[in-house]
Length: 317
Image (tube, one colour):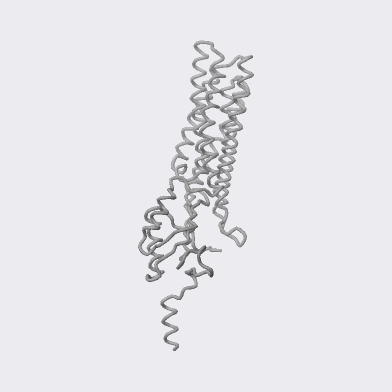
């Protein structure tokens, strides 16, 4: 367990943005649910449903950020960072559920469309648009380096499009009387959300399955290690992410025994940081590939004597 060695990302800014977005969304959600029922607008009800999932998603994302700050323990040596990925996956599943609900409800409404009150629908949708714009602005920075915040950002983004769709629908209904437009817009919102939700879910599953982080080229990484001076072979290379922005690497490296192992190790570590942004790495140096050796001849770096201990041993003799 390592309590003093960490490359954790700062999350204070994420937490503040999520807190503000949660307050705005939860407050407006109650207004929109009431307005959707009163106006009988499926587009407005679908937007209210998105607001509800936004509230849940933002609350879960905020809880995940707070949990991620907890220190490591003897049982959880990586801490609680993966809660952020679980929250992102949950948000994706929520979005799937809402989109499917809207499509099923729309099918019934196409057959028997109810009367829609366009003016209240227009006013509430305009207010929702303002709330979504503010929330998106708050989350725009954090979504670039956190799948958790990205999940919340996509929730708000889908709501923003929903509000625009409701505004357009309200105007069309008001001036043409085409009530079916309300349902058509709701279907459009649902269909727009589904592929983006699938993209988010794939990203979270990649982390949970410990796949190679997005944007990381494993072949180039392998080649870069092999081209490092003193390296004669590479095997058992693994790269994964604990959570967003925390990639890790383990690798077995066969090195030229005529060279100092500490120098080879230092050069590899520096290259991984500079070229690939990999800070959390575990490198096992070997004289021969471990599968070829009858007995292990690996260098355990922690067990190698330091210059200070060698000098002290010399003085004792």
